[in-house]
Length: 217
Image: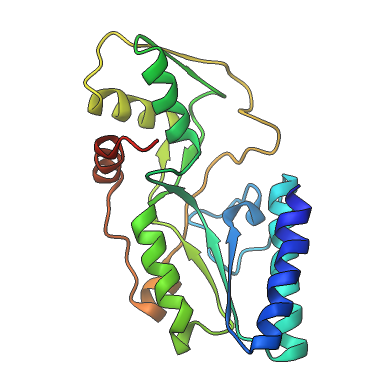
């Protein structure tokens, strides 16, 4: 399924863009880095995906580069970190969904020491709009993250507090949350800041408040 969407689907988009002479903004992922030793991780860091999802995104990036070099197609690649917000799935959705069903307990996959660079969906959308037309973005790869990271255990505490819950039994399953799960994600977003003057506007706490008040999770 990852291959069909992220590789074959990307090829279809690139071919359509080539015929229309349109710029392509490819939504790649920080998963292409695998478990990098350098954090914050810059765009120049070697790619080494540890999950097929990350591999399929890297293959999509290579398809983009091929079309750029072979057909002179304008391409922008975004390595997106952990987006959250209304209608976005992921660990935050998982916690809110579980606490809605059982407010007195929360099961956390893994050790809780996994750490994520969470970027709010409106900041992500603003970045997409910027790179769609910016001349400075053409042919570039950008990390899309906040440059901060929060452990899963810290995230659980923050969500419990914001929901106003008390006496919640938080327990960790231990081990790896799932096969191919990254340990820590932390973006070096200096390229986006310097080239495009883009900066994330929504802190994690503020974003969680927005998400909870929206009720769309």
